Structure formats: structure tokens, C-alpha cells
Amino acid sequence: MTELRERYFQWLYDQVCDIHDLNSPYSYTIVCDIMHQYLFRTDIPHDDNRAADGVGLRNDFMFTERRIPHPRELARLMGPEASIFEVLVALAKRCNYQIEYSERTWFNIFITNLGLDQYNDWYFKPQHQWRVKRIIEKFNNRTYLRNGRGGLFPLKKPDEDQREIELWYQWAAWATEAVTY
Image (tube, rainbow, N blue to C red; front, side):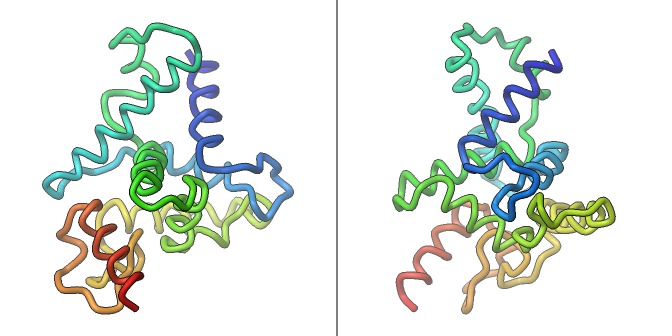
């Protein structure tokens, strides 16, 4: 099962990143692996939809593997809940469906807005792990700023506290603000 999990992680990574070189400033395998270790919290109403999108990627993966997914096999693949990495990959796909930038571009926007872009594989040192985990936990626990800074979709002039709004509505406000300003 470990081999299948590793192939699944690589498949997810390939959806949003081009580079697999630990010596490249454009590779984020370490950060993505850390995100994949955290389960996405669905404390905000309707964020369970984002988690369901993340879990749904497992079916897509099994299809590419030419395997008929059995529910128990899918649950063993990662567990019943989505990882943060799965959610961000699925969100990049959903955002790209609305505004075609490419899934890779959307994912890079997420990484940049979270402040993880500086922790590429080339720069990453073992002592950075706690910083990366702190950033991921800040996002997952919604302890970022009211305007969304520290999260995925920071706003210049938010109408509401972004920590209390589902991710999809945060994205909609962010996209609207980007067009307006």
C-alpha cells in the first residue's frame, strides 16, 4: 500500500507542479509532502465540499491507474478525510474551471499567498520544517488575519471576516476584487 500512496502523491504533485528536482527553486515536493500529512479541517460550513473535492481526486487517480476503486481501498489510500494538499489540488482544478489560468498557476498563487513560495526544494533546510508546519497550521486553523492575509485569498477591502467564510466564497471575493482593482 505504501507504493500506491507514493504513486498517488506523485500523481497529485504532477497535477499542479512541473518540476521534481530537489535542486530547483521551482520544485515544492517537500512542502507538498508536509501539506499531505495534515488533514483539512472543515469547521466552517460548506468547506466539507472542498474536502469532498479533495477525496474525489482519489477516484481520478485510480482511474488513471486503470483500477476499479473499491471504497475500502480508497479509504486505505489516505483515510476517510482529505489532506490539505488534496484540497489545494482540487481547489486549483475548480478555480481553473472558473478562470482559466492553469491548475499549476492557481496552485502557485496558493503557495505564494500562504507564504510557502520561499520554501522551495532548493532552499528548504530541515530547520525550516517547523516554519512550514506553522504556516500550514495557521491556514488550517484559520488563525490568519481578518482580511485573509496568511490564507489563500487575502483581500485589500474585505466585507467580512475571511476566517469565517468558506474557501469558495473567499475565492469569489478575491477574484472579484482582483478584477475590480
